[in-house]
Image (cartoon, rainbow, N blue to C red; front, side, top):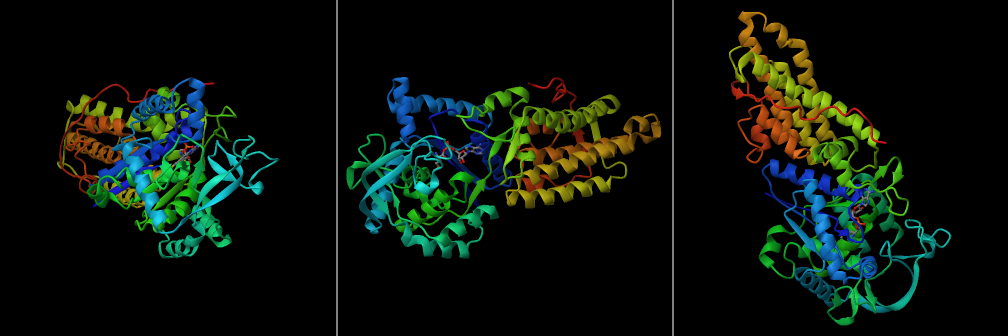
Length: 508
Ligand code: ME8
C-alpha cells in the first residue's frame, strides 16, 4: 500500500500566512496519519515560481527572479520546519526536472491536437494569475484583489477544454469521490453543466516561464506550468520508474478557490496527454482572521510563526485541526486560541498527564503493574470505541472529528480519575493493587489518546508517550496494532514539568 499526497504549491511573492500554513498543517496531519497506519507515504509540497508577481517583486528588490525565489525558498522552508511539516519532497517550478515534465506533457497535449493558436484579448489579473471576463469584475475591478486588471492582447495558444466536458462529466459520475467535500463537487458539476470554454495556456513576450517546446517565443501560462508539478515531482519526464511507482496521486489537498483548476483543467490536461487521473481532490475552506478573509491588502494576514511562538507549534496545529470542520471555513482569533489552549491543553490533557504521573510517582515510585486487580472495562470500551471512530473520521478526512475522538478518551480518563479517586484509595493499605490498576488503566488510556493525537501534535504526543512509559515509540507505532487496549503489563511513568502552563493574559 502506498499513498501519494500533495498540497498546492505556493506563490512566493509573499511569506506564508496562517491560511496557507493551515493547508500545509492539515495535509501534514493526513500524511502522518497514513504513516501511522503503516502506509508508505510520499508527501510533496513546493513553490510556484513562474508568476508575474514574483518577477515584479524580484525587480523591486533589485535581484534576479531566480535569486529572489532562492531567498523565498529559504523563508518557506523555515516556516514549514517551525510548524513540523514532514514533507518528503519539495519541488520548485524553476527546477530542471519540472521543466522537463512540463515540456513532455505539453508535447503530448500538442500531439493530441488539443492546442491551437489564437488571439487573446481581454482582462488579466496578475494577482490572481487569471484571465477575467467582464462579468467577473465589479466596477471594473478584480473582486478578489480590488485592483484594475490589465487589458492584454496577444498571441496565445488555446487548450481545447471544451472537448473534455463530456469525459469529465463521465468521470465525475463514475467516481463520486473524485472531488470532496460535496459542496465543491456540486459547484463543479454545475460548472460542467453550464458549459466550458477553451482556455488560453500561454503568454507571449515574457521571459519568465517555461518556453513552449513548439514555440519558444511563448511561455506556458503559470497555471498550466504549476499543475504539472504533481507529476514532475514524481519523475514525469525524468524518471519513469519513480513515476510508475507513485502515480496516480491519491490526494491533492487544495483551497476552495482553486478547485476548478484542479478538478476541471488538470484532469482534462491529463486526459489529453493520456496520463491517469489523480484519485481525489480535497478542497478545504478558508481560515479567516476575526471573521475577515485573510488578505495582504486588508492587512488581515497573520504570521504563522507568531501564532506558533505564542504556545508552540503543536497547540497551533491542534487548534486549527480541532476547531475548524475540515472542508468548511473557520476562524482564528487570539482570544479563542488562548481559550482553547487553556481548556484543551493546560487544564485537560496536560493536567491529566501531570496528575497521573505524579500519583504514580508518589504512591508507587513510578512503577505500575496492571492485571493484579479488576480492570476497568468501561474505560477500555470508551477507548476502543474512540479508536474506531477516529479511524472512520480520519479515513474520510474529517480531521476535526478524529481530534474529537481522541478527546473523548481524554475526557473519559479525567472522569475515571475523579470517580475512582486514587488519592482516597491510597489511604487504605489493602487497596494498593486497586490504586495500581487505576493508574495503569489511566496511563493506558492516555497512551491511546496520545497515539491518536500523534499526527496532530507530533512532538507533544511523543513526549506524552514517553511519560506514560509506552512500550512502543512514536516512530515504530502502527495504529491497528498499538491502539489496542492492554489490560495487563508494567509501565514506568515519568513525572516532569507541566506540558502546557496555563496562559493568564490575553494577547491584545
Ligand atoms: O493558489 N485559508 O498559491 P497561493 C486557507 N500557486 N487556505 C488558503 C488561504 C486561507 N486564508 N489563503 C490561501 C496558489 N490559501 C497557486 C497554487 S497549485 C498547482 C498552484 C490556500 O500561494 C490556497 O487556496 O495563492 C492554495 O491552496 C494555497 O493556500 C496556496 O495559495
